[in-house]
Length: 453
Image 1 (cartoon, rainbow, N blue to C red):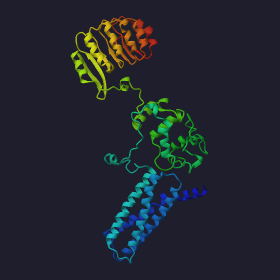
Image 2 (tube, rainbow, N blue to C red):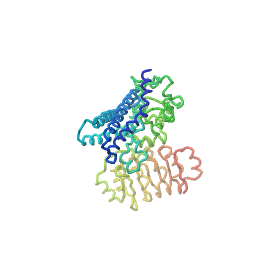
Image 3 (cartoon, rainbow, N blue to C red):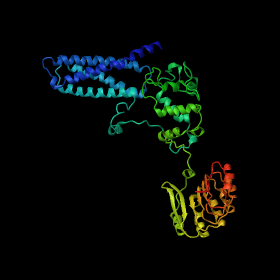
């Protein structure tokens, strides 16, 4: 551990030393320009400049190698910076050798070497900056037309169309973040502070400073505290590389406050609106409480059914291009039994049905009990009674029932009690009285009884 601390101490001189070779290389490239050419002393002066560039780049690379040994960096991101840095040292050495006075090589070699050194200098700087500040550091404040071409947006694993009880919060959402941002320093081989985050047991045990994660307690969860420190704080985590984004911190905070459970699925958690939006945007996880019409999956109907509906004076439309459920409205003067038989052919597909002012008879309502996916039913302006509606109690997804200007009375409250999915019932201009509404409203806290508009 002492040896590692010493190498880390000297390794941290790397950001300071790295500017020396940059300066010498740029100076040497400037002196190669025609305006600076002086045949009397040019080669000696250039040779010294390239020699200094070579020496300073060598020591900078060596100090950088010491810094890389501390394990703070992600290996895949570090490799490119290391290899381009080594190549820059080698070609700086070539630049010095080509300027030795006794070598009479064609100038083409020097020009090619200059070009290679310039490209390597740009690449080394870019990879080094990305390693320390993240891949978007250089273009973070660039104009939009540049940023849109080079901005590397964080890509998360998506769970499109997966049921929520198949997504495990820790395994699928939290652990990948810890693996990416924390495992470089807290693994089986290198466990800084005594913390090994490769296993659940290691996370629960924590390190020498205390528990990494404590369910429902952010103040005692040292992992959360350190990744939310100011980046100027020496205990800020991760010390190098890309910090946790706001959304990643938000997700970790929510999981901890939910109890930091390692085995629960997403469906077993309480999902706040903020997390709901985050999961939808980053992971394609739609945790919204969807209406029934979005959950139903049916094969498209045959064209002959639509022709039959039109011939029976029904207008129709599908809810959307991808949803075959139907919104049907009667357009004739009086609905007949033959017309209703057409509805039987597509009963599972009907989710909105409007038979308002269609001279509907009470016995004809029985057919609607077969429409298992019915969510809105308009029966207004028909001479029907509450006793005619008993067949509707089989509808488990009916949300809106329009009974205004009908003959229903207070018996309708028994029907409403038997259909808990109801959210709104229109009852004005019926035999139901305001006193009946007031007396029964408390029994239906989730159902709005609309008595007057």
